[in-house]
Length: 616
View 1: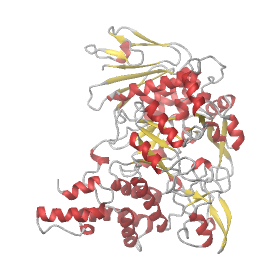
View 2: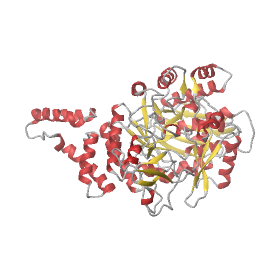
View 3: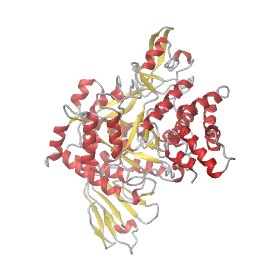
View 4: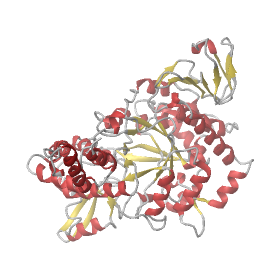
């Protein structure tokens, strides 16, 4: 392999070191080789790709200048073997934990170091990666109103602490780039008409028609701000402290690219693009999923993959399913997209004892091609999104689900429609608490069984699993915290004192230990099954509405696995003959350890019990 190829494959600071490598190539392969790195054919090709996206976003007039500035900001060069196309970036051993940097605290201890200790001690052989929710200095929304993108919140730790976690696990970080804090330097400079910050925010009065704008919140869209140049009505999709950034200004895009480069240098490999669907605004439109937004994602992927060919982009687009799927693009946008329809549909299936809608949805999902995958989750730091269930659950079914959530101590957050109507946006509740009782029923002693059934389903599905730390720990509603902050989402963002957590996980009589040990066991079993590769074949099986079942087959077709889940409160029986098991192979249940030698047997599943039947 020529030396310049080795450099491109391995070194993020490419242009500087490419110069020396090309000189080595000249000596080895002859004097005709191009010696100016900026003129190398590979660099020229990537420049053309950058320019294509720039023209789509900003037009022809300034495309050449913006392209050159982007090339410089990112030190970009074309990689020789794009891993996104030629090799998988994940396999069945991958599973992520979602956590705040201070979800576990100990007095006198740096939170990120306490988190790392817990991860290494308890989960080193369980999860491969950690999504550390926004760890920058912030002013509101538990981190999603960023003050300084290049700093770690000193209340959590520092970059060395992030890197220490990255030494043991793959780290996913948020790029909260739709908006930033009013306390940021950018915003303060905007008010003073100084750089950097001048032109970085959006005056809504410059847009003639805002009547169709889609909102995920019920707060006013525009917020009045006094600047040195007069009053401005600034665009705030998520609230007055989270001011939307203006990507019509290419100077802002250059700043974002420099931030991404810095993150790569700090060891970040997975990039979660928060609220990315709202990035670009156009008068008279819904201001969501616009073509320029998709072009910006394509450009950011090009930047990130050329800084680190193994890096991964995930888009956070909590919208109906068809719109969500569009963020795969043509294999040139997100590597991963959240399976946002899964949480409300799976919760409804288990609480109602009927998986019809879950099954219908899964049959409609296209398999993710190699190089892209679904990120499966059923709980996170946010609530359970309800928009992805639109068109799947009837109004009556949705109301029954929401009423059960309210009875379990949860809250329902609303969003404002363009006509002013308020509609349910998300259910705010700890997932363990949400499983307290079935729809229309009372306490039946099966809360833990329902909770584990939901996660057993999620872990078996096509895609890469992500588990919220409070699901791992069986954390219940934090009503006291919610009362203190006045924010519904706080109900699912409890901070565990480390000593209290250690006591809970050591107590055989508390559900926290039961849940934690069961969750670890499920994930560890999953990690050993080639049939659970995120891109392995999946086929929906048809039994009664009480049985949610599907078949998985490994990429090499050696392992066959039948995932069977009783989502009801009644015992269910499945004749083995209905699975069409190959008689010459040995079959066993990975969860119970039971071997099946007589194919005329019947699998009996207790309420909310599951079986993973495999030939390996």
